[in-house]
Length: 234
Figure 1 (cartoon, rainbow, N blue to C red):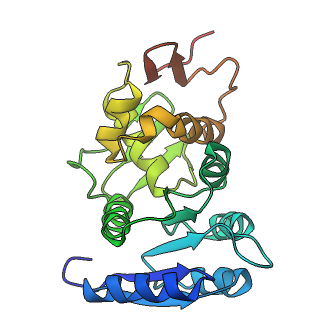
Figure 2: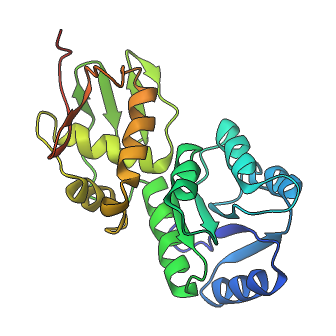
């Protein structure tokens, strides 16, 4: 997307916040579409031209949580969830439903801009140095095509999940702390402390078909972090 204006869908029912967000992003070279309800959000988000979606989770009618789930069922477009609640449970639920990142209200427009740029970079495979195709046992990660497969079957991953899997694959057999995973995936350092990394790992493990109680591919090393192993162990 070098040289092109990024297209962002902002889903926000508060007219003032929506206007301020739109104005700030447009001043920084974005094309912004604003919708105020869940029905319109799902319809618009599934159009292929958007590079990212900024989604308020507390919408009237159809909730942002439901919108997030519906979008993720049909699209890998990066989603930044926005919530006015401070409870960790809300942020965790948003991540479990497929959001790539989140901000809490009140948020700074500058922070939102940085987060949008980060999720788009991840989606385009520019979050870190590109490696050649990496094979770890039955898992193959191809950074050039942004595709990952398990036993030859394509994995439906969000951009953040792909970034995490790539980091784990490129360091197969090594334990990566939450902080190191966030650094490699270009995430937010604060996430290492509210355990949202654990939520993303849980989703990734589910997509790999790993038993969460006895994972054979994506191991948890208690007190240390996570490790992708080349071979399943009995």
